[in-house]
Amino acid sequence: MRLIDADYFKTQITAAATEINMASAGMAFCKIIDAQPTACDMKKVLEELKFLKRYNMELVSEYDEQGKQHFMELAEAKVDAYKKGN
Picture: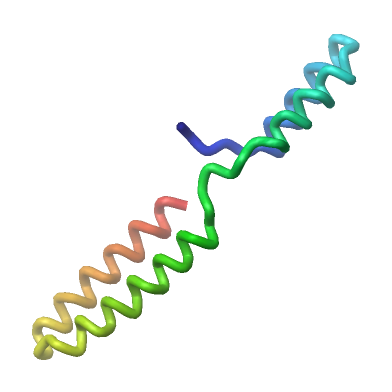
């Protein structure tokens, strides 16, 4: 499975269908696309990230200063990885 830009895909379908005089077929395909479920529930992802943040902050409180520094570096690396994934 992969994520796509459904709006861009619908624009391409509409243009192609109009070009071959089948605009109604293009509209039908766009309705099928709109009816598809979302592959990623962003609300659920954000809730999980908030939970992990709270959990990690609780863990940090148990470390000495050197451990906290190491833990924060790992956390920053995770944040960078999430940002690059978007």
